[in-house]
Image 1 (cartoon, rainbow, N blue to C red):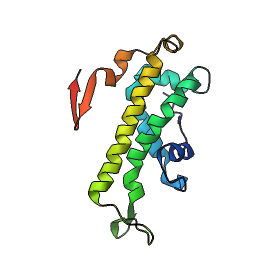
Image 2 (image 1 turned 135 degrees about the horizontal axis):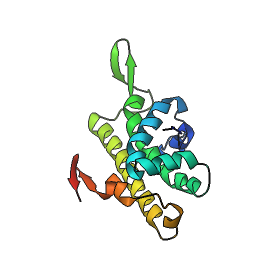
Image 3 (image 1 turned 90 degrees about the vertical axis):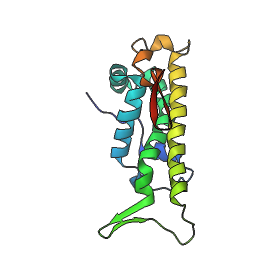
Image 4 (image 1 turned 30 degrees about the vertical axis):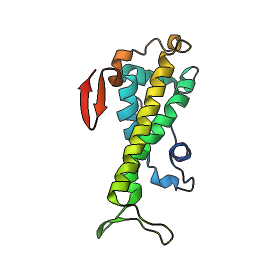
Length: 163
């Protein structure tokens, strides 16, 4: 099992964040790895995910990775937001503040995270449709839609239901 990041911190910021001035240091490699291993592996299935990592920069896998990047960027945003919003010091956790902006309350912060997760999920659906489209499905014979967890279950309000 070889890990290869399919997206960079710069790409995450340009795709998923409105503020392009966000420091790339806020998007840690660990967030990218966990998002990719959790959400993209689930999307593709273990075997096909490994195949994509081995061939990510060759055709037609490079086109697939281009399709995956928006979903992955929003999943990274979902995972990174608590660290971006919260500053941890030796005195404990505090919300990052600025003199020129107004802080969002906890409900607003939760909504921002939920929106990032929903955007990732919607882009993941686009990836699935793209792979299964007649123009592309012959390029990926090892993609089995039944290995895609999203084709077997649905998530609603934090609950998982079989399809």
